[in-house]
Length: 309
Image 1 (cartoon, rainbow, N blue to C red):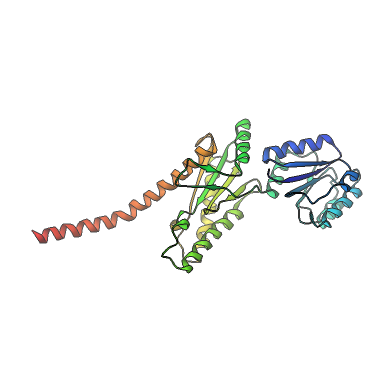
Image 2 (cartoon, rainbow, N blue to C red; image 1 turned 135 degrees about the vertical axis):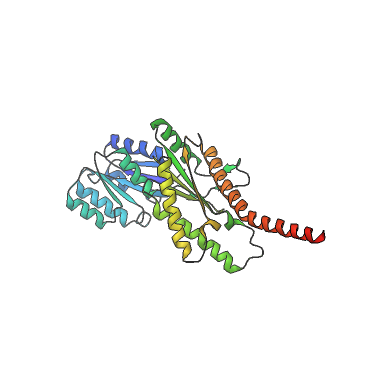
């Protein structure tokens, strides 16, 4: 379960429409509220309350604002994101809503993508997943249902879906033999990568970070060329930040991208291909770095052999 979302709307049709959108994004416990009386009986001390979606006309705008006021004064819901979905397009209503720290204001009838983008921007799925690059066959994560839904949606709509993997393999090396300063520097590099990735995301994108210092970014409705642009933008941003601490991007950060269905029909295969790109890059760098040393060693050995003759 990805959390609880409260939907306040007197229209059963509108509530079902919103619930259908939520089902495409994650697995949520959607609590429906159809009247102000029902809302007054609702205890907002809910487990993992993630979002409140409400219509202002409940049935009147004045009553809607009273509910909004009570939400913002409630200790359990004061900081919960609120999305207003209403036919009330007047400027005065929008201004008043902003005074109650409303996070988004959507006019009915709304486009599904508009609502979906808004919900995604305020609801982040659990980010505690784990996978081992040494055993790519065993990937376990808590957001697998979310990924399955995204892939099913992309397949049904015949729309592309891309992923960016930012793996910081060298940050996971054995810490024996390195100083605390080096450890802190490596942690700072991971923080830079994560912050840069977040600042690059669109509201439709989702970022997930693992304890093993890897970052996955989900890019809905994004083809290979689009993913490449996002990847390059992230890479450039990280590069600029690493310059400030005299760190080399290629020593730590490996951003790669893969696209469904071209590079995999499921998430497992997509991640296998992503890590293969990382491995290929590492191997190429090792070959490039080893070759001059190997040439020098061979030359010295040959000279020693000539002297022996």
